[in-house]
Image (cartoon, rainbow, N blue to C red):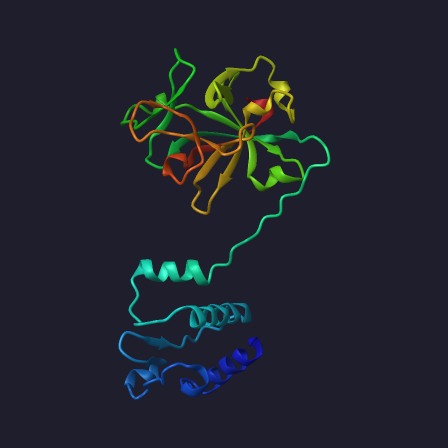
Length: 280
């Protein structure tokens, strides 16, 4: 199929805008329009082809052919006028390929080693609420700060860990979230069978440099998983499927919530700067 389509495309490029409708299942181009002289040809109402003078790579050409072939065999097109949502759904269902993740079993207990560089930052949820720590309580709150209240936001040391070479590294980047200029760290512990987000003091920070499976320190680890637009989720390593989550309302505690499709689990890192362990 690929060779035939490539030959068809080469023939099209050589003959400008002459397509054979019998071979390609496309409508014949209407090049009677004077605009055809400027490399623009009308098909029928709602559709126009423009031939660019910019050269295309063979990879780009192959991607276009593959996409068109998939759409031709999977869609019954009633009109050339698509809404943005309809076009998005077509591509998601028929063009975007799914990827398969193979989980490997660990032959030994998992271990996580802290990297030297640390990112200092603040955290905002998708609704632009800032994470704030109240001194008198061991909890975080999500608050929409007004002008002049920037000093109230919590600053975090986000420490990354080298993951084990097995199942764990398919979840995301293991990280530890410490509060700047303190010995306090976010943790996920079990209370009456339910994982809860807490703030714990770690007197010996060196104990976090190397964390092993079932050594009691996994509660401080979260899988950070980021997307293309810099949104991040934080999933408990100790209790998979539980994510750091904010509330829709202001001044509500930040907590752990079981996995579900919600923007309340999405965070952006702001005010970022990289420091070494010696600087914290």
